[in-house]
Length: 321
Ligand SMILES: [Fe+2]
Ligand SMILES: [Fe+2]
Image 1 (cartoon, rainbow, N blue to C red):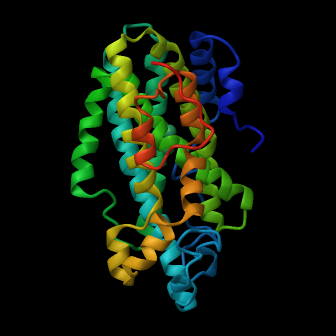
Image 2: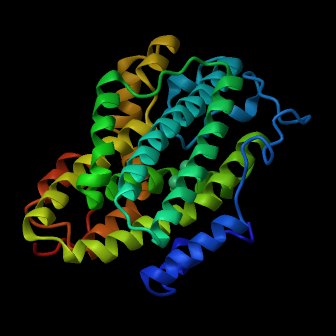
């Protein structure tokens, strides 16, 4: 999209105040409404679970398995659509935590703050995204639960970070937004998906560019000012958050494994033992990993955590604490 704003362009353009002014202006000039800008009921936009355009790509970790390829065409389509609906449900649950954390963060900002206004723009945009995602889930017709009960509990703890430890909260934000953005940009480049999905992704990618710029610049501004102890807490918790988030978003839910009878050995071969999948996870986390390296948050002490979670990339340079 010609109006798309890349995070890089935003970040290079000046100070925190300049960035906020620009983002606030863009949020007014270019925003979307879930029920105005998505033609849900137009011909060609309806969802048919048997539509072959939902099928997983041959380079998808599960799509590449013999098990998947040996399923009847209708089941392959259904699994692909179910996978998208699951990701959308997880996406809107992530956005729910994000919105509540942002409101916690904004609650302490003073009158006249441009950051307060921006935080509210972002909350409104995320609410529109969640309406879009939920409408898609409803129309896809799968009763996807999204996060497990345990992760839902964990997610609620993150909300408090918005006030108590905003730097860690914004690492969580990037841990959700960056991988989704990466996956959607790759899908848009391929460009042959269902028009409804393409429309939703285009809207999302356009607005997420602002959110990513904001979170990155916030961390660039704030992390250097943190105390030694807080930096250590951030350095240790960042890979834990990123590791859990990346794996949850990209794998089929336990509900799907059960419903389609996906053998455990297939899941292991598709995800755990699959170098191509591992590379996809690394690619999706590349931008946030590079930012953390730049902020000197990847240290010799935390390297084993990155390795253990399999989100360490050979060639990444850690820095002294
Ligand atoms: Fe979003
Ligand atoms: Fe966002």
